[in-house]
Amino acid sequence: MFTIGDFAHLGRVSVRMLRHYDAVGLLPPAQVDPSTGYRFYTAAQLHRLNRLVALKDLGLTLDQVKVVLDEKLSVEQLHGMLSLRRAELRQQILADESRLRRVEARLRAIETEGAMPTDDVVVKPVPSVRVARLSDVAASYGPEDIGPIIQPLYPELLARLERAGVAIAGYGIATYEPVEGDKVRVHAGVTVAVEPSAAYDFEVLSLPALAEAATIVHRGAMDDVDRTYQAVAAWIEANGYRQNGFAREVYLNYGDGDPADWVTELQLEIVKP
Image 1 (cartoon, rainbow, N blue to C red):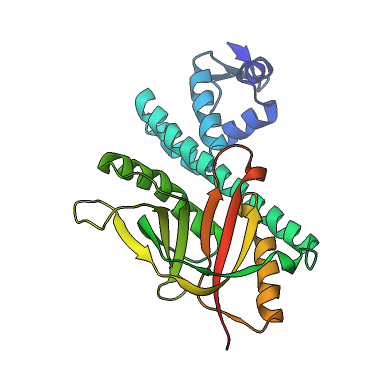
Image 2: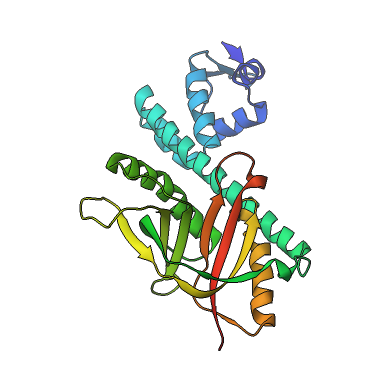
């Protein structure tokens, strides 16, 4: 048997925690000296301690841990449970990292308010273009809702194009349209040179021409697009125009190499009020 101090050392926990686990009935000692009150543990109790600490570190309350431990789950059941929780925690980490990137992008936008030149805006007609696309609905136009929707659409679209033997004939073009409430329909498209066909498991259509569009080139990842949008918004207002719908995003060079070198053209249809 091991003293509480030795057992704490072997299990890599504190003596204080072992006393607490004893008090709440999670891990009572194997033996207590009736005259001294000293606690003693066995090596076999390390198995329960391992499970206890793992479950607690995964976010379960001590009451929940006790229920799980007392059910005497098999190693396979426990492994499956921990693997699922691990996946949930990893997903939460990814979500938190994404949120942090958005906060940093907003801070950069605030720091450069009014500093980005509006003479980077070019007004031009945009011709009609044939695209193949996949679509889905996002809860809002916010990057936290758009990103998780559009990011998986592109690899899926490219895989379907390859299976269908359809070649990419130009740039990727993302378009958006409002649905009900704050929802937005997201269209992930790429330029193609084929006719629409019911045989395809993707949509083929021609995006309409824009008679007049305010266009601006954004350099870098779309996480930092807020600054570019501020510049084109200032230009539209200063020149007496009104924006008509969401911007088209034309990915001139995106997704490969250093994100600082990525290039996207924003095309916003404009009209005189």
